[in-house]
Image (cartoon, rainbow over all chains, first blue to last red; front, top):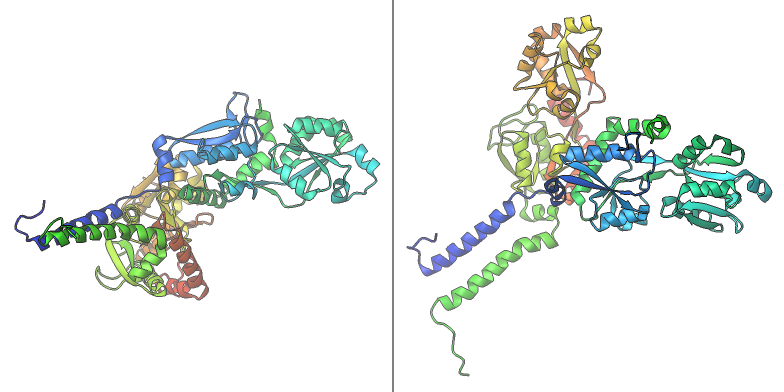
Length: 284
Length: 279
């Protein structure tokens, strides 16, 4: 309350001082990062994934529970934030996962998602938490008939080459960039690509070591008709997608990943899910 | 013109002046947020408000309240302010690390330094710089018990092993993860060692600086205790800044790099820490 004994000029000064004090208090008020506060107050971390399952990143075990490398990572992030995890498996393609984060239908995406430059225009990516080597499945008969020698680039980069890739996957972009002269055909799933490579409808299928190894394990006899090449080239790196405005959440997840990298947790996950295939015994 | 002044007397000047002043005051914070980066606000004010712990924590913070800051962290943050070409305004009221972080969150201070480690919990509300000093986790176990168990590693591998550590220690986050409710938090390293010697706990755990200083002060007990280190446990001490201050964080990271390159941090370590565990 304003003191009564003050003169007019003093009252003006008093008003100004009080106003400045209110402003000062407002600036000094506790202000926590709104992105993390939003998740904490909602009580859950919504993690975007595709409707399709992508073992060993996310798949159903024999008890029909969602498990896998990405599930482990996302569950621990949620736990550290003090909230429960909710997997939102609505996206039909990997690009749709990005849209879910952009539209705020999910808080983050941990979903076997490559941190491509194209996607990074729409969302922010954390540091790489896992990386996989690129792989190519080749039809041996068509390779022999082409008489183009063993060099992969020479073999695949010509107008008669038909190469299958999964629609909306990072391989779609890599194949177009690496083999610009070839006909790149987008498929709904990897199974159809391998079927068409075996049936000589495709010269090759381009993906990564996970897909290639999965196919090899499921079709050991297929090695007669199809050659699997795990490429030495730059690996496909996976990052966690975060909304571009969620700057502190991005900082915090990067900090989390750095800690998990230095304490060996990420290395153990890589060993468990990428280098070994013991997880396949648990798949539904 | 027949326009008549709408009012008369001194208030006719006071009211517009007051409105103008209010608008100007409103514009001040908005303008500074929109036009000036966090670091520019500090440089313009020529003051870096730093929060440190209220009490002395040698060899990290030394000197009485109100006096010049000494100790490794005191000298280091003074050097940071010097390189920023601003004065240091020391806020020395926080009793714990949690209170220091709360001061950063409330923007009462620009930075906080005080044996703060970049724990995930604190990082939810503030940003941390890269470490300006990396410590090492050290464990003191009863020599006899360790020998009987076949070494300190085996002794502590038991799922029932209980360990003790000092409240606020930089080793706590990792220990809490490893031992959960089997971690006893005590006020001093001396009381942690007491728990080991009484059989209540299997190890007293601290950082290398604290443990070596304690052993130097208690050489007789050094005979009863075996010292072991965890190579993978190297908590870093970092400066905390408000979550919005990413420019300031980047500047401080560069400053830490330069202080490492030109030997500033090395000489501070040599001056205050010596060489606890062949650092």
